[in-house]
Length: 399
Image (cartoon, rainbow, N blue to C red):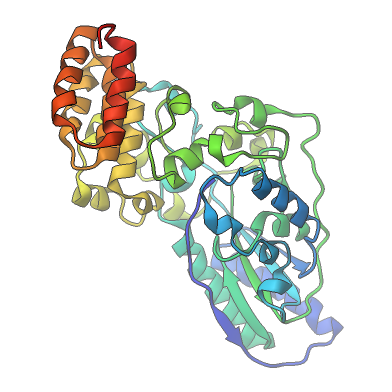
């Protein structure tokens, strides 16, 4: 469930290619892509994912996209690249391996530290891959002509079905791409071109009877294999969701403060994967399980400094500290109650509301009820008042 926006490049040139030229060009393209840092390359036709339209429409009709309205905008473009760009003839799909060098689930047992999704522990992949896509696109135009557009997690492009059609892997039961070589750890980018390049054979599903990714989900976000309900997904709840974390999911979130790797990390195909070779995507030491107390103390300037070049920066300080406070409430560490209490006076109602819940999980009943009695007089935000009401109803029998 990682979101974001990157740029689109549109280049053009002109040159005629015969069949031999196209085959040679495709081989040269793969070599150039590898030299630029891509780990896999495949080519598919612009009409290769027509069957994806029904699955995507079912997803939208079920409301499983939550409030990500950008997903519902122009759905016809997603299932057919030709609607997005009528001149496209071939789609070049590229992948970058970002496999971790340690078990990403180990941090979940360290309840006073925050778990940040593997993809967000290094530099923002959008920027890195966009630059490489543009460089490869320029090479393609200079070598063979034609016109190109590049996309990385942007516009109405269904990267995962296209990647399967191009032979890079298949969409697993967790709806993410799975590769026999790289497991569940591939960033994807696309180049649309007017050139008619030789196609790769689509990959087939190799999940078999395995349910590991479905069964491990803490919030039961998969109503069925190959179906995701974003409204229940921790990646959505901690990243895209702009409001309070729904109460029913707070305990299940544990110490996951940005995204969730559970369904990816348990995939058996990961046993064939190696750690990514891209140093800029490698985890920064300070983002490998940072302490919750330190993170809760971040103001806006400190948050921006800590997460410079990181995807985490896009959600802003208030949403991030909201997540940290949910993790504090799940820490079972009473010493962190003082950290949460200091945030009851935060300027952000989102933060204050999360602090209320964290305190309700950590403080003794008497102390919490005293705070609740004072908050009735001092708090002005309706959402935060409701947090106090719900928490005090459970903790304070006389409230």
